[in-house]
Image (cartoon, rainbow, N blue to C red; front, side, top):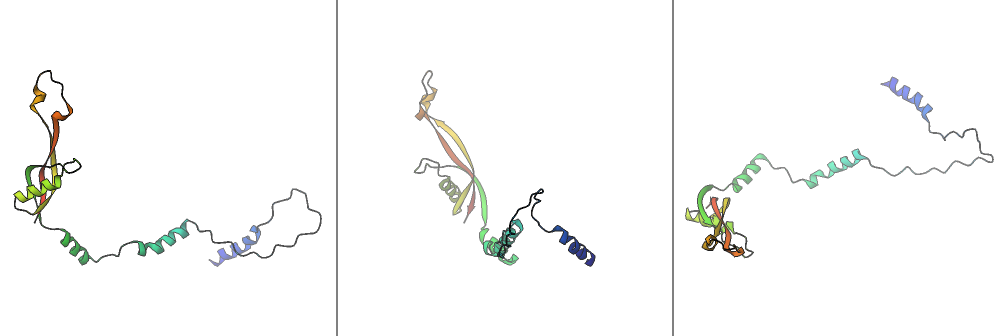
Length: 157
């Protein structure tokens, strides 16, 4: 290790920074005085420095780490007993015209003795008036509509 340091010290003096060669031209006149000592340059952070700063900030950015027992308690509170049920309940139209399948899922679960539910599966069908069966009659936009049904729901008490 000391041999490497001696080698670097010996070679270091040969690597001094000097002005570029003047190609045989020399300035005439008095030599300029060396510039006054300048303060060290401002820190110019590189990628490594910036990544280090990011790691310093991580504890304030990330949520606190929970113990395994705290995690299990949280999961127990979230995992309410639930049951999947099947049936077929039409989703009523909401105020904006879209089907309200939450209400249909609640109705399906209530018909099976549960309090509320979430839709797991839905089905759609086009329902048309008998007028579309008349031969030669041109189909009109209001002759058919699409109905949506909840066919399975996850129910909870």
